[in-house]
Amino acid sequence: MRAKIMDRAATVILTLIAVLIIGTLVGLLGFILTQGWHKLNLDFLTSPPDIVKAGGGIGPQLFNSLYLLVLTMVIALPLGLGAGIYMAEYAPDNKFTQFIRMSIEVLSSLPSIVVGLFGLLVFVNMTGWGYTLFSGALALTVFNLPLLVRVTEDAIRNVPRSQKEASLALGITKWRTIVSVILPAALPGILTGTILASGRVFGEAAALLFTAGMSSPDLDFSQFSLSGPTSPLNPFRPAETLAVHIWKVNSEGLAPDARDVADGAAAVLIIAVLLFNLSARWFGAWIYKKMTSGAN
Amino acid sequence: MTHRTDTPSQSGIARKMLTSNKRQWTENVTGRLIATVCAALLIIVVLSITYFIASKGLSTFFVNGISITEFLSQVKWDPEGEPAVYGVFPFILGSFLVTTLAALIAAPLGIGAAIFMIELYPNFGKKVLKPVIELLVGIPSVVYGYVGLTLLVPFIREQFDVLGFSLLAGGLVLALMILPTITSVAADAISAVPQDLRNASLALGATRWQTIWNVVLHSSLPGCLTAIVLGMARAFGEALAVQMVIGNTTKLPGSLLDPISTLTSGITLNMGNTIQGTPYNNALWSMALLLLLMSFVFIMILRIIGRKGLVNK
Image (cartoon, rainbow over all chains, first blue to last red):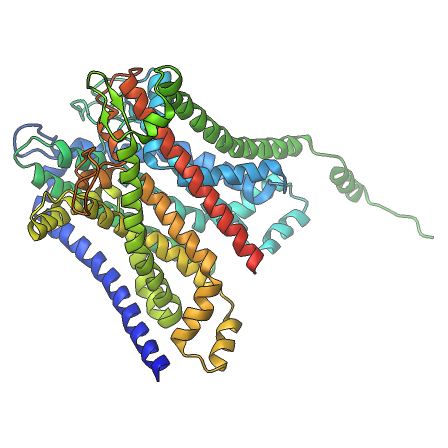
């Protein structure tokens, strides 16, 4: 009898825990979205922030976040793909491979602030660039590389052996097999993982405080040169991203509507992250269907 | 015995197949080389992170001549005083306290949710709880900090009539942040338990809970421990969300409701305001080195747990 009561009680408690977690997420999203909802208009999304007066927007920050995401992925994706291919296809069972595995483990558990500080030393001070978008992108590359390598490796390992063997049996070289048979088959997994990694880049702040900096120059959006100091596309200018902006406004905001700005910016960030997450899901399912002719 | 009568075109193919194609060979070797270089880059990055942080962090002791034991054990942090005192013990204590508190809250919840997801209602777990957990992972840490600041801190302030910025607020925010990590890793470990074990236990007349408690949790223990340690590693290194809600004083806390500082919050707040190369600045780098060393310690613990798990199987 006791055992039965225990069983019932455990079921109830575990269910409560599950309800609590789901409730927390719903509450969190609901809170952030309702707080920031009234701020979500075109003016807020496009106008520059105001340091002391009310009515500032988050235009440059939003642009910086997106541009930084593109820069980071342009650098990180090829490196992650290369290392992932090595780990899945070439890595022999030896000390070197073990060392790489260890490195991936270390990198993925490093606190992001430590990555940021490393970026400050190497990409900001040693190179003499100062706080720049490019330094931020390099720091985020370090931060995201382990995830991308793991995603690529897993996706490649999930490709059926027979496909690879068929290609090799046709006399096609190993590299050609990887590029034209294995990678296309592993693409859905790689893309889904990349979109999720993008969400992480978009929300990361600690690694950027001391690499991309905490301020933005006045951007002139009619300029498109890669070198002008006020040109939005110049990768060698300081850039405050949306996530960094939220942190800064919350901890040292001077504008009278700092709370409001933080509410709006948090809502925008959450919506962006939700979009990344949902699109990864949807895209993964869609491409899977495409490639397997709908069989499930 | 028959002679092989090859037509000219067949012998051409044979020759083509037997002689190595230089272009393909180069391509093959180059491809392999590029992949190897990318992989080697990971090692280079880890080594250079260790080297650069260590060389900066150790200069507190070797250039500025501050003793390591004093640095670690002194409870007074007054880098701008005369004479300046660099005791990081409050920061270290703060980091450990907030991490432990977060783990104490998140571990039972996370493992409970994992059991619910795998053992009780696998369908609901897969369709609802798993996506929810994945969404929680994706929420940026500044957003957790922002919610803590606008919701949790005022709540604590009103409930207990204190400042609000506190160890408790930090622990709760971190618990929420590491909950998804613990849940998903523990869920993987629990679902890896062979079904035979469950069936055997149920066949002996054990209830579902007895089976979960005595059989499933017992055999997935290394995985669940891994989950908790991974969560703690994440909590220990988290910077901004914690910094926003813990109040950042270097006094030692007397209760859960007192404000504290952590290694990460100390670095975040002061790194930008100090001049490179000064003893104050170097002390911050030493704190970063401590963070780095702690993440090595966490990895070692994880490896030991992993090895134990293999031995038990």
